[in-house]
Length: 234
Image 1 (cartoon, rainbow, N blue to C red):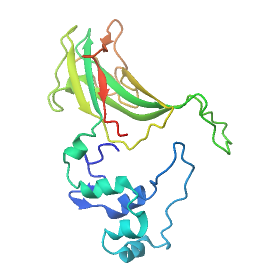
Image 2 (image 1 turned 135 degrees about the vertical axis):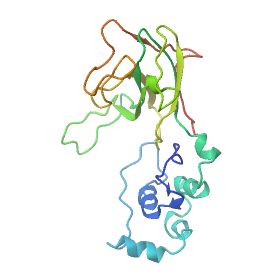
Image 3 (image 1 turned 90 degrees about the vertical axis):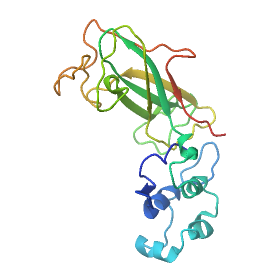
Image 4 (image 1 turned 180 degrees about the vertical axis):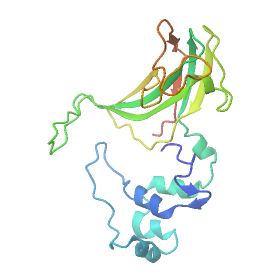
């Protein structure tokens, strides 16, 4: 379970969004390592407004429908503020970066690599091959110039390493047995992530795409180098 307490997906300014959360988490059920496809939750009526009226108190969601078997739903209700429970689940990127210029932007990617013997879907009209498939779980860009403040850009000192830390958007994802975890660090996705500039102040929109010729960026690994931190729940 990711850091879903950071934001307003569950609680909109403190008010629990019942329909959105129940509609989403009712599809999460205990399953084997490779779960079969499950049918959507049956509300028993085409009128969801009527369904929630008949549900009664929110505690009835567990008693009548979820049967206390949905840990995600329980977590959402038990932790209705951004407490230590959610904060400990933050996916945090910590980069040690240097550049030969004054600015560099990066993308951190968390990828689920499927086993080489993973079966293809059936039916498979588009002939999709799942063996070794790389599923992007999260990909988040960071503008190097805003590493310390989103309102005050700061240039890099050429050749001097700087620590860049930021929280990635939350995600609810399970790495199944036999899958591998891949982490990629790349330059900014262009044009999806916007244009790249390697100087401060930023170039006008549309100018620049990647580091200029002759400039490079370095992200060393090792115990004190760049890393991605997230909680592993058994």
